[in-house]
Image (cartoon, rainbow, N blue to C red; front, side, top):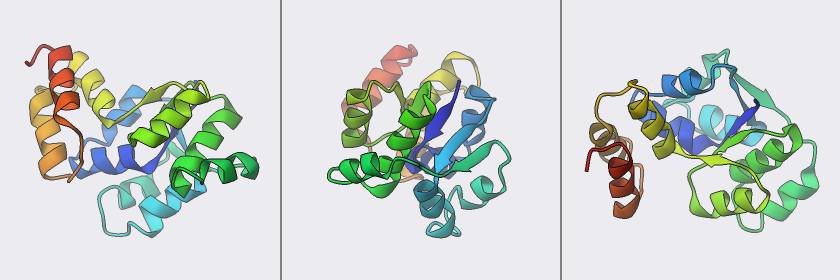
Length: 163
């Protein structure tokens, strides 16, 4: 199964030292479009995830062929999100890793299965890769400066029996 990621999941998990969870969840590796590489590695130099992603052998950069779809998506999304969704469509991705609400909606309109940072952490808790989802979500919010609503927080904790 092919997996495509936007920057937010990679940056968010890197900010709390949990990028390895993506590799463990998707051992076949993931694809990122060029705009995501630029955002995380070039523009994000010195920030969480930049070094890990640039040195990673399990994350491959792929050029998006269908610039028309990217152009249409750019009317409502940023370049990384637009390229990630376009790439996911092109390669027939089984999952796209996205967090932002508008990007998730656009991906779902295109019948793509979406998983976000919180979803990766829920999976990790369920399979015993992390001890406390609450601690990870708090770290993500407090140290990673990751924004998510109280409802998402509570629903995630409820899903793993921590609320």
